[in-house]
Length: 129
Image 1 (cartoon, one colour):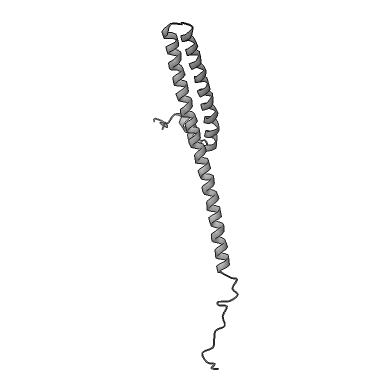
Image 2: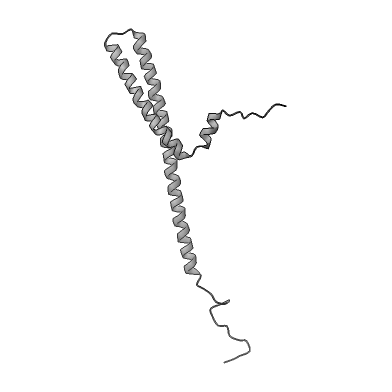
């Protein structure tokens, strides 16, 4: 008997279970760190080119920095997406609560407390004035 194996890698399952806020808190600083490190490597590649290092050295450093900068931008962009999603959810919940309060207030004003079936006295069909 072959055991049932989940086709998703464990990391994908872990990320799927994370809250949106946790994803935002992880991706935003990570994206900024990668972006700043990529800019540092880019400046180092420019320095290597200025001092006359072989082309292979500074080109590889430049490509490495390009990969780091792009990865940092992608991570930070995803973090912004999660943050916007958090804000939209918060505003939606807030507006739904306000709308519910308004509806409840209108219903309570429309329906006064009734003691019987009707507030008006009904005339008896037998009595005539």
